[in-house]
Amino acid sequence: LVTIPEGTNVADADKILVQAGLITEGELLSIALKYEGYLFPDTHRFHQRPVLSDIVGKMLDNFELKTAELFNDLSDLEIKEAVITASILEKEVRTEEDMRLVAGIIKKRQQIGMALQIDASVSYGVCLKKFLLGEYCDVSLANIVDNIPMDSAYNTYSRVGLPVGPISNPGLAALNAALNPQASEYLFYLSAGDGTTIFSKTAEEHTRARQKYIQKN
Image (cartoon, rainbow, N blue to C red; front, top):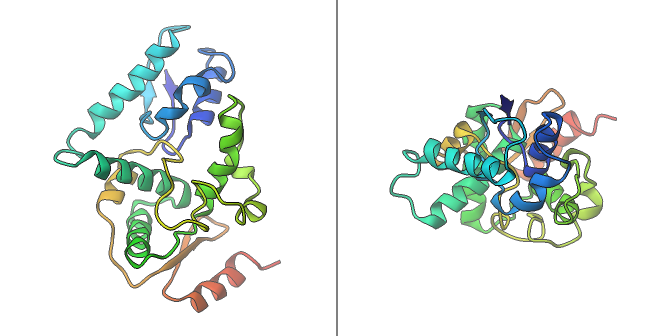
């Protein structure tokens, strides 16, 4: 049995499978990066040293099975946008309630043409260069500050709208939240040191929240 947690990207899934003795380093990353977002996070049962295509196929089939009812009657574009949004929610917030609120903020920003300004997306874009070479990169350690001025398809500061693709493989809670965003007065949010999410209505409130919860030192 191998457990791939919700919000795991393909590079991290590769490491998990390597540690389980099922593949060699970079093997999953080399063929499955194009399926980012659709390798459903779950506990999977594999035979010792399975064929890599069987591993990927099982994860993709599981995605289809688990999301069939959720995505019923949705267009391909709606599904893609839901998966991208859910992949962001997995990286940005912890609780399902916060996921729905952040999904609402993402939707509101899209409607008013405001950049999403999502750090997790920028981090993924930084690591993508290594991912494409089949090399591991820890998105949690990516240098966001220096890369925000650098435009990329995953830079949600320099470009308006969702990034070009998912940045992780989301579970059902995040997918549900992406499809059922919670409307609110909020337009900003940030994660405090303890993992809680602080929401703000205005840029001024958001700046004060950053000073209180992030820039203490």
